[in-house]
Every structure is written in C-alpha cells, then in structure tokens.
Length: 257
Image 1 (cartoon, rainbow, N blue to C red):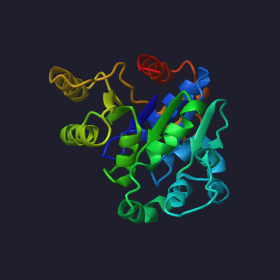
Image 2 (image 1 turned 90 degrees about the horizontal axis):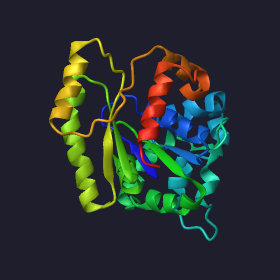
Image 3 (image 1 turned 120 degrees about the horizontal axis):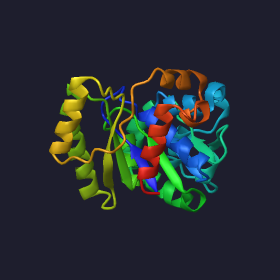
C-alpha cells in the first residue's frame, strides 16, 4: 500500500505522522519505505538523526528527480536513491534543499508521473510506502498524490485548518478524477487533540456530522513527541507504552495494509 500524508497547511504534523506510522509498520515486520518530498527534510532528520547531517554523502530524492531530466544509457535504479534507517525494515529516500531549485524544471518537462513509475518499480521490494509532502499544492505534492493509493490528511483542530480542509479535499478529488482513479482519501488524522478543551471536541464532532472520514483514535497532544523529535527516535522506539505510542499503533492497525 502506498500512502501520501498531505495537508497544504504547515505545522499540522505531517512528518510526525508519516515517520511514526512507518516506524510501527517496520517494527511489525513490514518492509517499509518513507519518501521525504519536503525540502525542509523533517522526516529525513527524524529517521536518520545525526546521519542526516551527511546530506552531501547520501543519495536523495532530489537526485532521483534530477536524473529524470537527463538522458543516460545507464540510469540508476530507483533503489539506489534509498538509504537504510537505524531501524530494521525501515528505509528512506532522503530529502534535499535542491528540491526547490529543481521544481520549475520538472514542471516544464512534464515529469509529474515519474514518482509513480518509480514506486511501481519498487513495489516488489516494499509492503508499505509512506510519502511525506511539503505544505503546498505544488509539483511534489501532485506527484505524490498521483503515485499514492491512499491519502491521510493531518488536522490540528483549529479554525484555519478547518477552512483549508474543504479546498484540500477538492484538490485531492480533482487529482483523483484527472490523474489517479485509484486514489482514495483514507481519512482525516486528528492531531494534537486535547479532549478536555471544548473547541477541539466541537470542531471534530462537526467534521463527523458533515460525513467527513475522521479516523480513530485521535492523537493526543504530548510533550513526549518533542523529545521524540529531538532524539530522532520514533515513539515506538522511544517509549512503546506511552499513551501517544498506543494511539499511533491503534491508528496504524486500523489502516489497510
């Protein structure tokens, strides 16, 4: 299964959700790949830690896209742009700041389907693929939506997120209709949920009442996730019994493989 984690709004937890679901998949024995399409590289930093500082020595997703712009008699296979993480069964195609400068060239040369072709090439090697995306509807997010089978939408329970949600769903549905008939919105992942506060409860309930696919369980707000980021250890490896870890595990197990 190929998942894209997408929201045009920044700061809603895309990288956190991507990496923690992927880490659980790998921990459960699934051959798992994360593709980091965000030039900020948060998923790359989260999964590689200090190794991410060696960006010049690592293959990256930018190099993969750059190769599509050139003719070569012996192009590298997609697997050559992938690195191992410290965690068994969990691999990564790292991000790079060069993604920004490549975007215009890729758009002008109509390379929007290259990621899908690459993931189909990798399909025999991985059970689950998670794609982290930048906070914008740009070439990379469109490529990811075209390449994926399921879309997860992080949502952080504020009014700005709710206003953006409807246009986001329209954009996903448009890409489904025009480019990827097999794409499905798997659901909205409620993040940083505070059950004792009235606004988050009311906002989420209104989404449910409107018939939107809100996934259970909701992910609790916790300072532990900041420690997880700082140590570059997904929650399943940092504190397997923590409430938030158990929520991530329940969410993961509710998704189709």
